[in-house]
Length: 170
Image 1: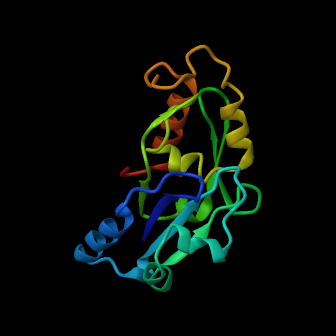
Image 2: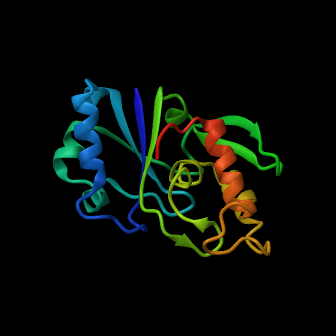
Image 3: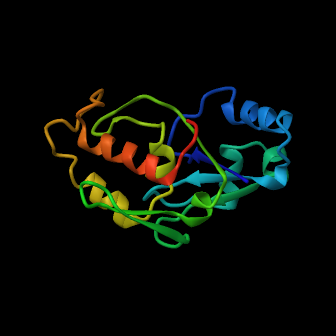
């Protein structure tokens, strides 16, 4: 099974949407639509409604693939313990159960995470509220700034969570 974390409506969407090329490639590798689930990474944003999904995915994709809109308060969560910073790691259980985990989204400077995207799309976008709140509580740290990666505690924690979750590809 393949789980693909994708951005919700609050993030910029490249044109053409790279998800279409990824799905074509997965089909070429022999994956069937029934083996692939798209997870809309909502984080703490209001989850998208079914009526809003055509804003980020065309109808052909919506007709062929299972799409799960994550809700940080209601989606089933896998508890993976705590990070080195003692943040609880709660991640969407259905995404975590996938054999191949992929994160697709924009990568750009982020005001306190250093950079958006990468594993952040999966491990913050598909996390439980307690994970997101604990991670973001350190946003006043002096190294929590745009463009800072190696020493940014928020971003490094996100990378740690990504390793724990087992995100294979971004």
